[in-house]
Length: 358
Image (cartoon, rainbow, N blue to C red; front, side, top):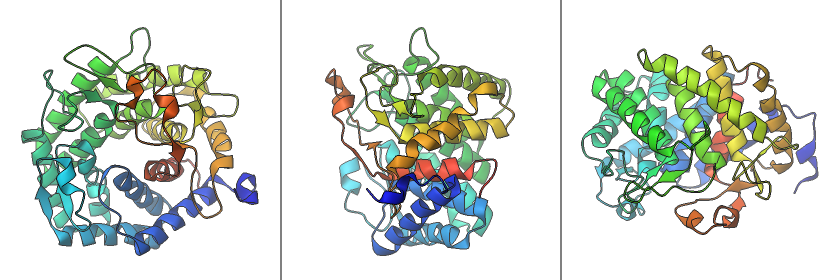
């Protein structure tokens, strides 16, 4: 690891610029698909670029989207069918394929490209009218897994709200609020305001404990849609954010991070979830959610994350994919860590929403 990664003279913005510059280089030198973590990374680059008024960052996202739009939008019945599509926007029953919808409205505000309205409608219609549901009416994570997932919350609901705003179709917002209610009611942990990662509607089984990034997906969702949905849901969302953060805060470690299973003292410290918390908390605060004494926890999160930044713009110690490996009692602990695109997105979104950029 480079010697300067713990240089405390580097501001949060400096660290995020390294990450953004790395993503710009990667975009120029490789085919970055529109799926899941890649879409989150590009959403982060767009928001960070808009915050800094950095045309290189914004234009990189615009060029990436343009290339994929030129490749065409297509529907596929199975997520594996889309794996070979490197230029284009393949949409499947896997919620990760809907991720590019996250940035359509924000990019449209910059470029005015009418194709982004078509994109929002294409994916919004699929999710609302065709995507597979579980037996309790919640969107499946993918056609192979008839469970509810915290990950699905983020990769469907904020995008549907944005699509509703961009297209003027109220059905998308209605579906978003319906899915929010279904998912959160079944993923909620008893005796806590935190959430399990997943729930099996057929057996009632849940994943163990409180997975850090899963709770990150949920607070991001709530923070993003706050002030963009009608009452009484808006007030309920803001009150819920206060309760969730009140439960997240005491689980922060002395190093400023959170563990991948937040409640387990023997679980490893993970970097992406804390930055997702920071992003959501800062965004919620900007919308009038009073988090009080909790707010300084997110400066400590940057301090805890600092040793895991490399000089060439990687964030390390990011948990990999979970799928259903947690069904092993120690499954979360066996998931490999490293540099991942969702970690990149977490850095850039957290930096984009800070009160001051340096």
